[in-house]
Image 1: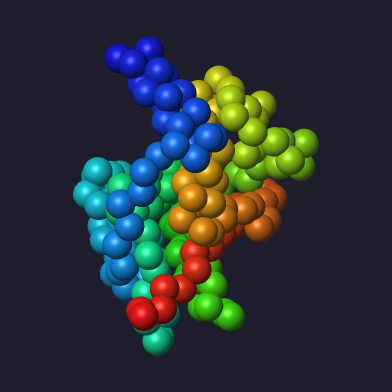
Image 2 (image 1 turned 45 degrees about the vertical axis):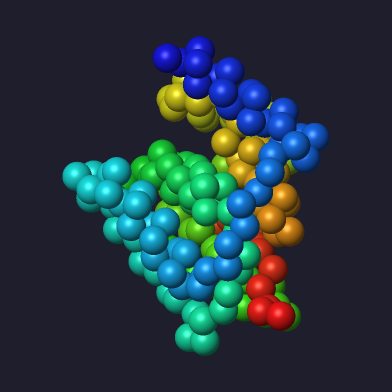
Length: 178
């Protein structure tokens, strides 16, 4: 099973690397997008007691996304935030819209990513020293998530990380109906 997962991840990664993944784009409200993806993630982790606080846009906006790809990005970021938790604390999601760029901030209060590891976290197969033996994975989650975000016209960046936690920003262009 682990080998099948690895092969599937590698094939998906290579397809994104050469822009060979067809996207099934649909427009959706940003607030709804976040709410649905968080609810889906929480349903898989309902007995684990993690709280997610969401600060929605006051004036909702639309984004054009591939539902499956966005769900993969959310799942990866929320799983990483959960794995980083050192005590029972929550995850905060803040949404902003500035200059027609939707920014979704994923803020955890985990152990953070070391300064030495930060430049490499979006490199395929890179696993930081703290994660190598403590968590499962192949080092493809963040690089694949970044590629998926870019395929949607957005990006995924690490804004900050220290011993108080990490903040990742998923940015997507606002969709204006024609």
